[in-house]
Length: 78
Image (cartoon, rainbow, N blue to C red; front, top):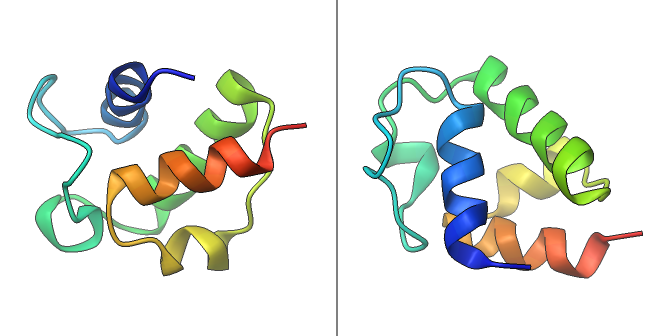
């Protein structure tokens, strides 16, 4: 799984994020102005569809950076 592609998919999943504006170290809960419960659900759906991985909302909330979400997704792939 490619980290940069994951960041790009993460950007696409969250509405209102300019492509190329995020990186693996982005602390998404605080650095993405439009982060809300819908963004949370959109990222969970993207992970399920693009990576065939299931993570729980509480696991996503515990992540700090996009790279943390990437690592969690990697370890949760079916």
